[in-house]
Length: 143
Image (cartoon, rainbow, N blue to C red; front, side):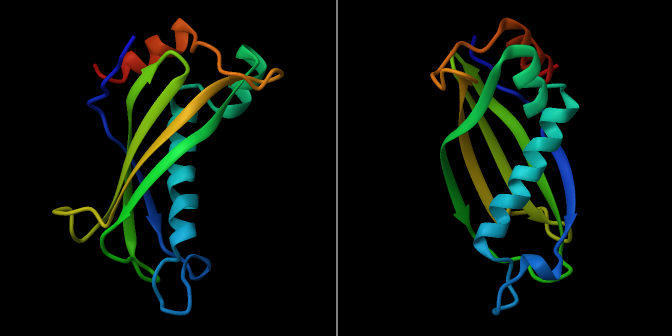
């Protein structure tokens, strides 16, 4: 099953002191943490957070790869929106797209990211097929 989600899920965030470096910009590694938090909120929203995956499916999602393009910095106290959607879920992979926008400028994102997760057996640590129940839940996001 190959899914293309049309729905973007918004996660608002205000940049704090801990997010910035000596330049006053958000430190590049902090963007990854902010993106992760937004993905976790989406997973909880659809009922497939990491704890549920472990307890119900004896599975884990692990990062396989990530591509991030930085276009423009955010600063201390910037109000941003992280937009997240599931691009594709197929076999043992889930691909998630994310964009970060400054609230005052929704014309062009300041960052775009594409992350691919591997769905793996929690004990064997080997890839396993994503259950139909999860694929169906992801498919419902399109409607």
